[in-house]
Length: 283
DNA sequence: GGCCAGGTCCAAT
DNA sequence: ATTGGACATGGC
Image 1: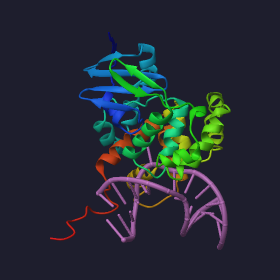
Image 2: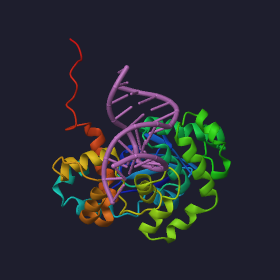
Image 3: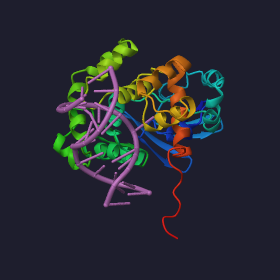
Image 4: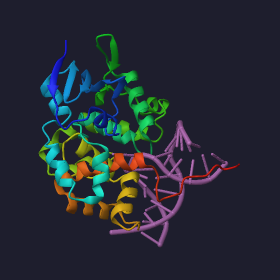
């Protein structure tokens, strides 16, 4: 038994595969998604979503179907330099992740890459998360902060120097740090998050954007730095702070969306303008 | 094999 | 207030 949900201006694939979220697997045109306690299956045909394992309110919230994406795209499109990125990923929406999972995932993301982040997160879920089933598909929940093993056991899962950060973060989350974030201003929330070891500007902005719906957050990572310097700073290196200030002034409340389109587009485009593609090293 | 990865932290300017 | 290196591991 499944429910159907109308989701105009939504592209399931772009939304899940754009690198903001790591808890999904694809099987043909269907996806299994694990978000907090919830495991659901979703498939898109045109503007219709077929969903098993979640109700329409959950889906609407998770995929931010309440965002006026048509309006957002229209507004961002006034910037010509953004158009290629907007055109490449129509229907890409920001996901509303579980705060703790998001915090953990982006601590894990430090100096890593998407396949490895995905693997690290899955390893943690498999090791300490409760088993959950949907039909004959099974998955594991991501462990709550109190359910983690020691720093040492995290190191055994190959988390490297991130193990210590994650261990400390779990303790802070256990004491309720994430619960107070929604009531704070964006700057105060950022400050509060940055108390967590392993959470500085970039990771804090990811958490604000991907878990708390602060659409003005603009995480500056290596890809965003590269594409922003290329598009808006004449190729001249500037501090990340300057990039964030620019984004804030130019896009305001929509900076987060601009960021995710640019990030996805920039990654697909590859490392242009930093180094020319390498020719075959030897004939 | 060295460089770099959805960075952060700490020490030394 | 800025800057360089260390930090684990892995992929190219």
